[in-house]
Amino acid sequence: MSLLTTSSLPTGKPAGLVDGGVDLLLIETIFDVLNAKAAIFAVHSLFDELGIEVPLIISGTISDASGRLLSGQTVEAFWNSVRHAKPLAVGLIARSAATQLRQYNRGSVECGGYIRIRLPERGLPNAFGEYDETAAETAGILRDFASSGLLNIVGGCCGTTPDHIRLMSEGLSKFPRRAIPVIAPNAACRVSSLSNIDADTLFVNVGERTNVTGSAKFRKLIEANDYNAALDVARQQVVSGAQVIDVNMDEGMLDSEAAMVRFLNLIAAEPDIARVPIMIDSSKWTVIEAGSSVCKARRW
Image (tube, rainbow, N blue to C red; front, side):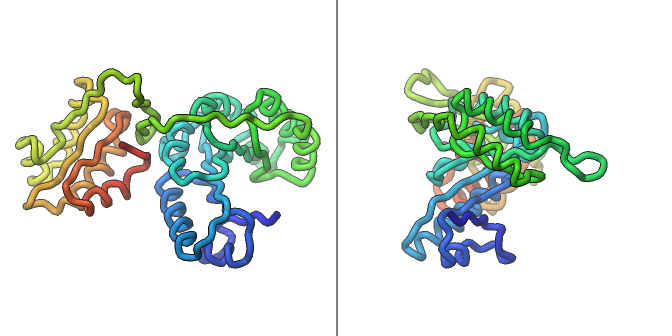
């Protein structure tokens, strides 16, 4: 099997890879899901153009002990942000020892209606730029994952050697693959974490004060370019119990696309606001498209 990534060519374009006969494409080492979404769009556009498809794997990277991507997303939020692409597998590359993947593996079981892949590094480099985790240590850690029914595909990232891969194969071959659960598509995904809205959800509070057509105060703030005060309006809605924030910039005197993009980018940098889902509200497709282009998460 040939396995190439979209970063394998200087141009970064997958067309040459598909023309060359690869068996699958790997969008890897993702630290910001916007990058992944751009790559997914490019790959799917190519599939439409060529009239063929190959399996797609998407792999995010855990940047530190927080268990989040560098952009702040949890594993669950990352999965819900990319699952629309219907990848063959979704997984993690850890920029730390395989031991630190354990808690994130277990914590993401419930969100995982997908093939799970793990690509651990051999820990962090030491003072000499070398890796200290031995092949036996890495294989032993992954054996614990496999015996708990948490894995489908494993491999190695930075620092791993042929011995690491050999011992992984020898140690894991006796364990059954993880059973893939059927997960209903009912999640509203936040920028950083996850909020489930399903048939059992009784009531959802939607804050509509960040709507220029419904709030004269908010419209005047946006027209005056006072985005700091506009963020306070959004923040107060969350403090008051809003579970979703509606954002609308449909005003004839505004550049609605630019205002939507700017405001959503500012919200993404405010954890106390971004912890709830955003409802992009507009009568113009161009505004919805512009807002969606900067949303890190999949949102309803």
